[in-house]
Length: 146
Image (cartoon, rainbow, N blue to C red):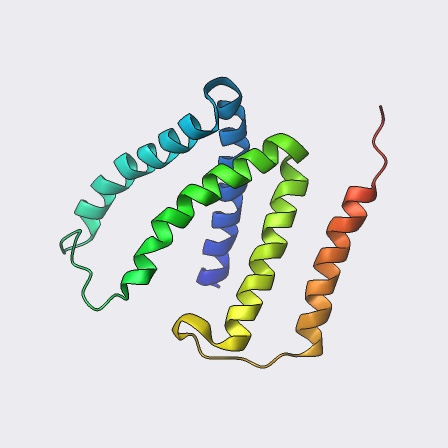
């Protein structure tokens, strides 16, 4: 239950962040916004890190170096989703992003990539993904008043 609650909070924050980023980008530009957002994230997370964690910021231990590129992905997440929200609107852009996340997560789970235990493909999972994609398509087909 705690994991589901954290995921819900994360989804709310991601949606709000991208809407806010799109509005900031209208005034500053997409790369300035990306830099500002990630810079503020660093400034906010450092004091929390130093007050909560009892280890060095650079103590990577046995971490596979390829996983350290997650921060680079963060730049792409902020930039591309912010631009998508600006171009096609928040609901449609975030829906497409969620579908791509679910499909990739399903693939990673099924294949057992990146050290996760592989899981089987079931018709329930495939129906769920199909319903999600169908829902976004139905949403996009809605007639909008001009």
